[in-house]
Amino acid sequence: MKPYRKSNGIHPRGNGTLFQNIITILTFIVIALLLTAFHLTQQLAHHRQPALLTSPITIQKGGSANTQVSSKSKPSTRTRKTWPKLTYDPANTPSVTRSSGVYANNRVYCMVPFVWREDFYEIIMNTWGKRCDQIYFFTDSIVALDAEFVRDFVIAQDGEKYKPYWEYPEGTFPDNVIFINMTRSWDGCTDNNGKPKICRHIWEKMWRSWVYVGGHHLDRAEWFCKIDYDTFFFPENLQYYVHDYKHWDPKMEHHYFGHKLYHRNGAAGIIAGPCACWSHKTMEGIADVYRNMPKGHLGPERGKCEDRNGATEEVSTSLCLKKELGVVAEEAIDDQHRDFVMLDPYENQLGWNRTKQGEWWFWKGKEKNRGQMEECCAHRPIAIHKYKFPGEHRRLEQEFYGPEGKENKDLWRMKAVNRRYVDKVRKAMGIK
Image: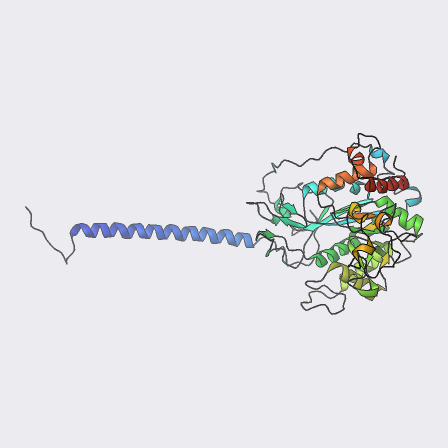
């Protein structure tokens, strides 16, 4: 038996094991460093992409040097949402566009502030949107293609990320979708469940959209209306109101009109956001005002027409028009004090009783003989608000423009009070 030999108190085999352990550790360290370097390289490449949120200019799809379509993007394999076909003949409408005859000089431009959602785009374009002389959707530059709408909030589905529109394949978005590049961050906001959602800087989005319209589309219409995505709009009734009912001249007169409210801005009033319209002269003037007004105020409201963080659309619009152009909001009501623009679904507003409900914000400041209940609403409505699901727009199309026969189930299943109002509208519009 060989004697046990010591060398500095360490067994000879221990030296080999220690050496192997050191080599293994060093190998792991080298691999980790290589992975870190690769990650940093990818991050650096990402940050060299065009800055999305620092430029104050407006970007249209395919229209700027700093908009890019990634060649690495794969074609979309999504299944497009479909809705039941409309049962009426489009020829039954007063006309898809009424840009001829007596309305040749009363063309209607529909500006829809939007956060991209394909099914809502399609239902609008196949219902009231097709009756606009011009319609454009102004949306954020950051898009979650298959996002979910939860009422007014747009939430990315699990596993999907918001990304710049130019990273999607060319042709993903229709030509009448215009992307607005804003200076305020779109991220950092969450819904009630803590999921990320797009921050909505509505005032900045609105004034930048109108600056774009004033600079690029001013010659395309005489009347310009901002229509919320959840509003059902009647362009032909807008033409009736301005031409036949009011006899306004869009090129020579300032007009800013819709449903006027008094609970926020006192006697001056504001036009409620779901549908706000102005004449060509006002459009031209306000675009210039917005283009040149002070930008980036960080403090509270101070009675100035300016770009300000946290500013609200309706109050800021009214303030800028009054201070800079001397234009005051006008109520769109008929001679029986009935609303042309409804802020709630007509089936709800037909039941609003001022005497029983009392003076809540909707009634505040309005004349005592304002129409209510079944006399609430004009028979040539311009807009009806708060239809937040695409299927509701399809239903309204059937109710107001569909055939009178029993094949139109949407019409024949209505409550009696709703049917009475719809029949009055169809008769006034000449829908048979």
